[in-house]
Amino acid sequence: MYIQFLYIQRDVKKIRQIFNLSLQNVYLNQQNDLWECQLLFNEKINNKVINYEYIKRYVTIYPEQIIHLFKHYVKYKMYKNAMITFFYILNSEDNFDLGNFSKYDIYQEIYKLLNSKGSLNNDIIHLLRNNLYIFKNYESITSIYILLANNFIYDGRWNKAMDSYEEGISECYTVNDFITLFDNYIEMLKIVDIDTNLIIDLYMDKINYLLDQRKTYIADIKLKNNKNNVYIWLSKIDSIINEEEKIHLYDESLRYFEKNDYIGKLSDIYISYAYYYYNKNEYTNCINIFKLALKQNAYFKSANEIANIFCAWIEIELLERNYKEALNIARLSIDINKKSYNTLYKSSTSILLYEDISLNNNLKNKNNYHTNFNLLSCMKLVSLIIDMEMNYGTIETTLNMFDFFYHSKCINVKMVLTLATYLYEKKYFNESFKVYEKALSVFHYPYVYPIYVNYINKYIQRYKDKNISYVRDLFKQAIYGNDNKTFIPKEFAKHIFLMYANFESNYGFIKKELSIYKEAIPFLEEPDKIKFYKIFISKVSRAYGIQKAREAFEEAIQTLSDDSARQLCMIYIDMEYKLNEYERVRALYIYTAQYTNPLLYMDFYKDWREFEALHGNENTFREMIRIKRSVLNIFSYD
Image (cartoon, rainbow, N blue to C red; front, top):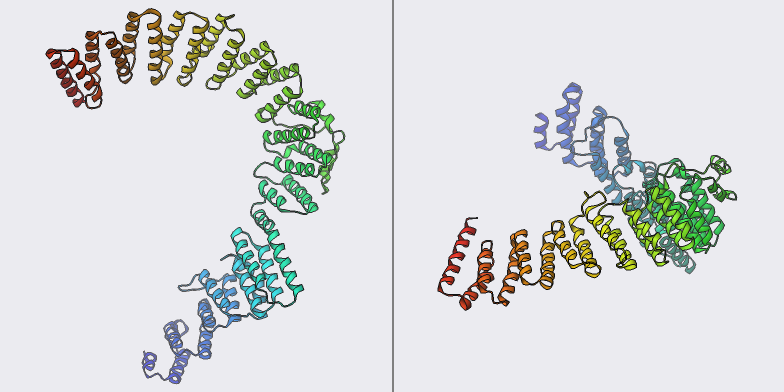
């Protein structure tokens, strides 16, 4: 209380004397209130020396309050002491009372302090460089390297600034940090204050070099963050221009993935490596890369990767016009456990530039060419093999290969259609149809639908009316399945039944054709049913006359839903009206009205009204109005 009273008198000397006296006579555990008053007094007098002495004494007694000393250094811009205190707080394992500050707030304070100083002395720069790892915990390292570079620019030490930027670029771990540093670096080089033309040319060359290397720098940063990603390695390799360095990177990536897991497809690196040699017209080295990949297939995760190697190898042989060799590789790729496969490697040697004893020993073992993967599960490779046989093999070898795939259960619909069409065009009709028949025993709907369509069309095109019973059996099989239980899905039924009816129309009997239209109704979707009934009624009318057509109309109306039946009734009414059968027309209007809402189908009742006005009388007109009201009441309750 006495010290607070002295604050009013503003006698600094007296206050200091009383405070020192109180510290000497009060127990240490009771001095908190005294120090609290004294620290407030220090803020008011704003004297650097006095404040420092009191804060130093306070921190000596209470080391956990070192934040007050840090604030004092920041306030009076004591750069070196502030940085030493900052690093001490962050590196110490003690728990300091930071008050309202967090460690990140302390970092921001020290960064603002350093940024406010135009030129940093060597001691501060040395401290910064020795403790860069601490800054990485709180913010990107970019800001510190820009701070150092700006300091050197302020001093006119351009080379040092360039070194800071390049060091910062090498330490970046994100692309955003790199872009910030890189852009600042380029801008710095553009404003360099130099007089000599020679030096100007050197700096311009430096700018051009940096711009050319930008893609490489970004690839390096991505590789730091995700070294197990195959495609990041490929982007890094793609960014390199120097051939020796590119080959070294290919080898380094392959060596790395021998001992580490990978993300992506390792086969892409081998294929890229092989194509690199091929584009340099080094065919032998290119082929050796493929052979090396297959010897090291144990590193692959899936059969698709090995299949990709074979596909790329075959493509290279085709580009070189080595058609027989390409065909041979395609045949042998279906099972690399075969003894004949090893003959491909009798002359293979490693072309990797790095030395690996275990790898070299593996290459010397010419009998160690096998894989645990089933390459027949890779449809890309299987389809390519069939294509190779069709283009460069014989009909016999093509059929043998297809039989092998058929028994291995690795054929697909596209392969069947392609091979069957190929055989048909080559006039091997029986063999083409056998391919279809084998496929029908393997596939089910929806995959079997295009096979049925193509098979039936080709068979009819070939034999026409020579084997009608067999074609009918095919249609039955397509509709009811091999076991008479697997019915055709509704989305495919329309086209199959139309084909069936068209076939009977061209080569069969009208009665059979009409029965097909009726047979199709249960298999069709609702919009297709009315279309089939329209065709059916039209054909019945032409073949058997109006009476049979009326029976067909009545049967269809009883079968269809209300909306479809209403449409068909309107067609029925139109037919009877053209025949001047007005009583029938009136009866049809009355029948149709029972499921026709007057509020929704006003045109129907308008047509009925016009009909009664022209061909009816007062009683029929009244009956029409009564029925309309009755139907309206029924629908209003619903």
